[in-house]
Amino acid sequence: MANMEKKVVLVLVEGNTDETLLIGRLRELFKEKEIRFEPKNGDIFYDMEQAKKPVKELIGNRVKEILLKRKFKPSNILAVLHILDTDGCFIESDAILVNNEQATLTEYQENGIYVQTEAQKHNIQQRNEVRSRNIQIMNTTQKILTYSYQAYYFSRHLEHVVFNDMNPKKENKVEKVDRFLDELEVPIEEFLEAFLPQERTATYEDTYKNSWQFVSQDLNSLKRATNIPLMLDFLQEQVPL
Image 1 (cartoon, rainbow, N blue to C red):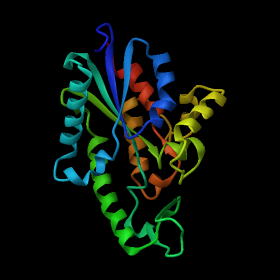
Image 2 (image 1 turned 30 degrees about the vertical axis):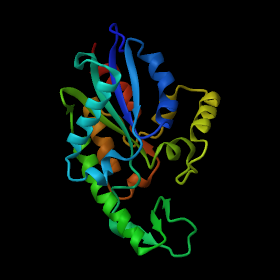
Image 3 (image 1 turned 90 degrees about the vertical axis):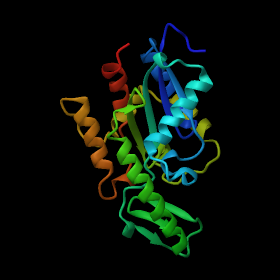
């Protein structure tokens, strides 16, 4: 049951490492808000089982499921935030390259996505087309249902930004983030600020828009970048109790 003395910010994520990296600092900074990370196994921006449904409907349904599961009232919710990985989805098709001799099915590099076969190239092209379209819809969306909504990214993903590892192993991801935080000597937002791709402008809105314009161009969705620091600005300035 939600604490009635607090207002809830839902943070939609794909896995657990985002929460591990950010939750401690968010709770420290925003004690008056209840920050709730809600992981979903799978990629809501590329859900082939529900591909015919508009992405806003899919995310709205996800929020409704969370409210029902957590027994939140609509009045409890301050905002819905979304953290996603770009996974190189904005690159042109000619930057998806076939290398029959590579050991892995898909290999990400800063100059392209390398795949073993033509079939996998087709799969990545299809995924990128759907994901990029859906992400562009959501990064210009300000409301889901009746709630304020903002989308933030890690490019190519969290491990790339934090560890400079474009192709991490799946094992021990959470433990690795825990060790990183134990050794970090500055607040996490200060560390991530170095990877904000564009200089801050006079307003949050312009900086947010510019950060998405950057990552959607050329090969930038394969580069080491994030606009996560803007999430803290949004919580501080744009989400009053």
